[in-house]
Length: 362
Image (spheres, rainbow, N blue to C red):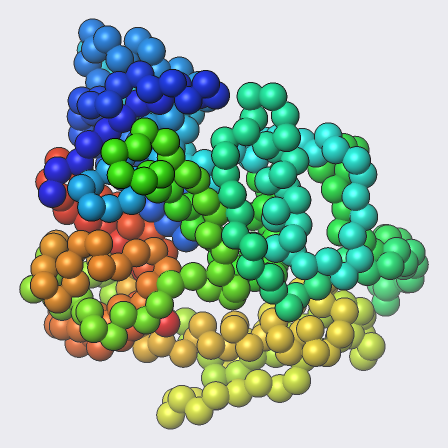
């Protein structure tokens, strides 16, 4: 199915070209990362002369599917071609400082803080992209009353730091994009970009940050990828790192150091212990909670990180998206695969129709 590209001016929203002839184009969608559109135009293309960094929006679409939108943030001349790179709208807060009233939150929902960040960046002239953030709530709470911590380590080192509220302030917050991504990784939650046309035959777009706690996507039990059928080549397979037990160490020193509960799993192999540490963990329950997903990460017998797929009835294009979990099977050379993978990133070559997936074993 062919792709169509449109060009819009920002921040005015004026349409420049409804049929941009973007060559060698690729479109990437992802979880917890902005979309990405790349391509090139001949230097003599009239529309190319109207494309500006941070002043143009690329819209990529296939019939019957929601569009993918990205802000042009890279232009370069290579030979007689203009190379174009554009990032999804979720990257807009990157590098923007907090200039609003100082905020110190205690026991606040991190998803509320995401909405607070987006309200800030879109509150200024020429900064409103019309992005709406989902109203989803989470049970997680961040920020505590301010406490000054002073102690001497076993090595004789004096340590002093202040722990407390979740802060947004001009003197400490100079990159709201980092705040956004840090909240996602530490909560954790997931997000994805969603754009849509407003009604039929409309020239207006909506942009949305979809939130998922703790994840986005579904298990697609009715779909599958099979090597030699809709997986075009055997993926690179590696043996996963192995451990049957995890010991997580947290804050403190010596015998007073925080340690997680002992976590083990039956593997049918020899006992191996993975030791990890995170000084930000201040309690046994927090350390145990951090250790659980780490132990789970040692479970798969085999790992694959990417697969190349084609359109097929077993998993038609458009029936899966980043965040979804799909079964992969077949002979990969030295290993027979029969495992579930989660799609983290999906890239389409708009000329050939081939699709590359970055995946993780579930």
